[in-house]
Length: 431
Image (cartoon, rainbow, N blue to C red):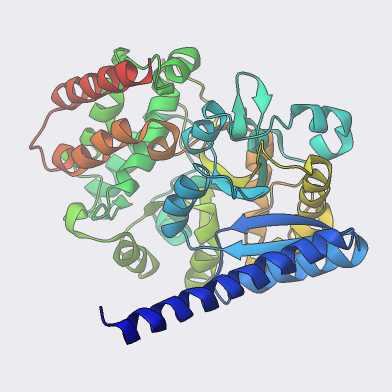
């Protein structure tokens, strides 16, 4: 490096330090002026979503002139890396996004999430404003560490014209469901449209099967990385039921090479009778099928040892950093963000179902979305997506085997042995 280059480098470094100093002093000035600064990290930077959060923040600051919210929005994928980095350092957001289930529990185990139970118990009106099944997925050892912002659930959507043609009713039990699938198949109709090119679609089926076939206490013990064994016979039965839907010709052909979006278009075009879809996709269904559709939850499995009344799905939400210097103000912001008024705006502006009771109605959402949320309100709870409710290595084992199960390359017993082996490894790493 020449002398001239060295001087230039030193000058640039000094300039950068001055800029950094200015940035730091800006934050200090705000705090020095008596205002409390809260850092808020969410995962919706998209132009169609971000304005909603900007509006909520501005209104909160207007009503709380002593608090400044500094928002950072990072998209779905990168935010996982961002959270991993920032939570290992000292610059932790006061309020940060988290998926529910194991994703949130990692922060709890690391001591990074504030226990919100005392705040919820102190303000019972706030606690009771949520659909109970939306708070549950953020609980660990009976304590609540997260506040839900939105929620999603999985239902079987059906084509009303096809159901009417073959005199079919919404099934209450799995046996009734299988009879209807057989009727459709015998009449040359594809019973279930299914795209498994991205195997998370299979995981949503397996989430429901595990929930209905494995006792709840056993499943919770197995989903805990420290105690997971996955030896209950219900897990193999769950995989077998998924395989049987394909072997018996109830799933559409070439499911493994069909994307979920391509499959949706086939369903919208009337190429099949049913499709297992998310609540957030209901507006797309209505747009394409104009009232010619209905929905029902995964039917109860007679003799299943799990909970038959839970619904597969999960809320997204926020945790509060255990390191925050301003827990009271952070809670105040979360209360504002999840008020009935803002929950209603969330549904109206973004179309997202709100976990706040009465916020999602037939007036601000299509009636099927409101009915789906009502179904969640009546359910025993939510079975969180399997790939976010178990350790990442166990989830990867399920995901990597989903297509192999469907094409017959592997049998359910083989897959479960692999998962048991991974669970044992995860257990030893957690000790």
